[in-house]
Length: 265
Image: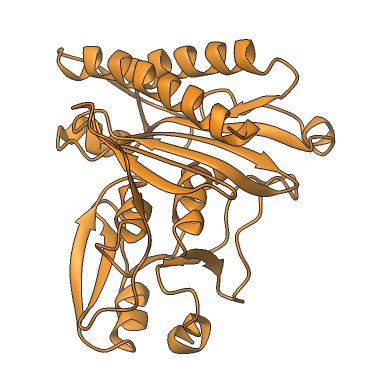
């Protein structure tokens, strides 16, 4: 068993424990507050963050942990990081508040600005997607069944486009119109990356701000299944390269060989 294989198993267990903490709040009458950027925050975000950060620090005390709920780390310090964990303890808090089940726990390991291990766990369904460099992408469920190895597919026609339930724009619609007939698959959180990795969708187009913890785990899950997460210059998203933790506009695809930048230009 490789180092990353063993780590992925342990991190999957941590994500499941965080999911249990989330579900305790999900099944109660929870309160919602707003962060400085007006995004929602619940006790579930904080409970999951506590579980994950404490467990990762115990597992690999030599590697820093960067979390959405504890992101106040100066660039002068982050710039020295070679390998570190990046965490979104509850991706899709808006979907959590709506109680539609489309929220996830995201944990990724970054090395030299690239995600080399990623875990996306869906608390309500129990689905667990794990991926690591050289090991592929595996998806299992809470029923205890054997995880299946998944790979992306060649583009379907019509194209199945996974899209956010909470975001979208006229510009996005205009870009998609250039690709021909499309079937929409509305989804919250990092589930869009997972569905493309599992060959159930072909494209996710995201215009507008996202943070690095929103994409790192999903990017690893998709890349190790054969897909890609690219900016509009055709370059893979990279992590911790500057002071800002915001991503550029990007698209996630299953068929890596297609010239998506030209198709969307």
